Length: 300
Image 1 (cartoon, rainbow, N blue to C red):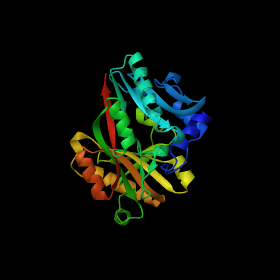
Image 2: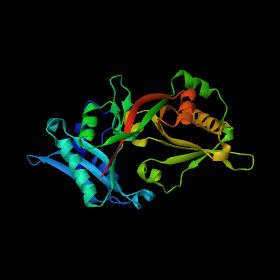
Image 3: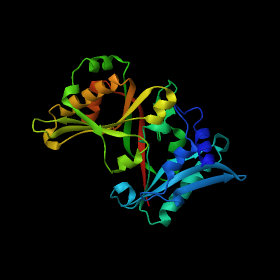
Image 4: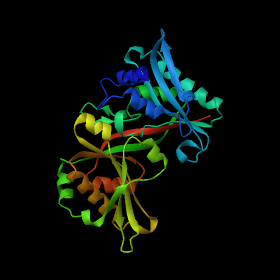
């Protein structure tokens, strides 16, 4: 695990915005559970040294509680700077596809929509991006050569607590309208972000029903490493019958106010580019796009 973490960190030199992986962090991420196995880890060696590695996860009906058609997902792929330009990344990608085919998968995915934690990469202006950036020519060429096609675009968005919009949020009274509690879910979200303490904020109706639910978490390792308070917003949900009535806005406004009072530096979220209502709400409240990422798919 130490070698894997070293390769990941070395591969992110010049782009890594925040704290590096440690061996225990990586071991926790790769532990065999929820359909994952040690067979999903692929290694590339040059002169008996680790030049790169990939995590080729099998997504099936047992994976993190999701019900999916047989598919594989390339969760992580990294090559050391010294080994780049020699086909190591393409070899890992081919090995991942062979891994999926041998296990009867009908499609493969490569996701660029991972906006949190140590997957961040620094942009030239000092901001961050994650996953497979839509403008990364090396990643795009590698995926295209393997037969992948882009299927969905996403945005990583940020609310800056030191910005003008945050001052407006701070002056709005919403704290008395909501209840906040630790999340006790057992979904893919709870598993994928199990290193953090996920919380729920509810906007109650007159009869005690939930009009809107927001799920968020403090980015613990990242915040502790950088000395600032960073939060991830996983979504704001409203029941179909309660939409277009301002419930999500009230809940999110109260949450931003709450997090500002906790000393948050910024809040980040991921939103699909075709989710026009959500994008409109986030932009109106003061969230700004950090970078666009893309999801890719290959059907065998």
